[in-house]
Amino acid sequence: YYRHRWLMIASFLVSALLIGLYLGTRPETYRAVMVVMPADELDGSQGGSGFNPQSLLGLSSDAPPEFERFVNSFGSMRLANALQEETDGQALKMALAPMWDEKAQSWQKPTGPSTKLMALVYNLFGQEAWQEPGASDLMQYLENNIVSELEANTNVLTLHLDHRDPEI
Image 1 (cartoon, rainbow, N blue to C red):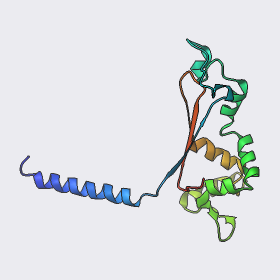
Image 2: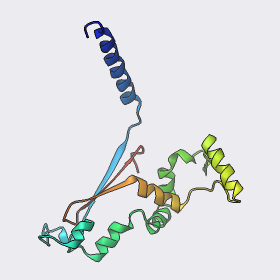
Image 3: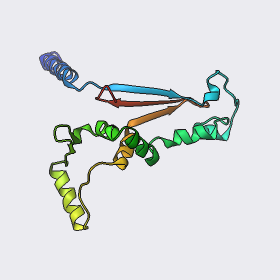
Image 4: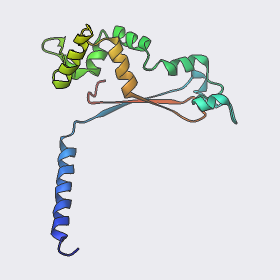
């Protein structure tokens, strides 16, 4: 134990240096948070006490059907289409920023060995390997990046999205 103390100290110092380098160079991330609930619950009254079957799904028994539809709409194609239309395509450009070339005002095809392999497979089946991103890509982005947390036995839904762009 005593003979290897310098090895342990050196390992600790190298680890601390690597952690410091990572923390100093990682991209800054911003979080957007939204808390939603049905309008009739804003007065603080929470109906429904005791067990109810809908609580197994995360919604209390008095959740209005409109709120349930609202909760289920996140990650839907309808929402992605509405976002595309309302933002004139800016939502997709922000979500998929690494693929958008601002100077050329166009989408850039992904490059790399895995992309070339996928292109070969698609071409074997007579399909186009790549197409410009659209509403379905925005829908997939929303599904993968919006985290929703429904408080147990309530209709309070918290949504959050982490992104590198502070304006998203």
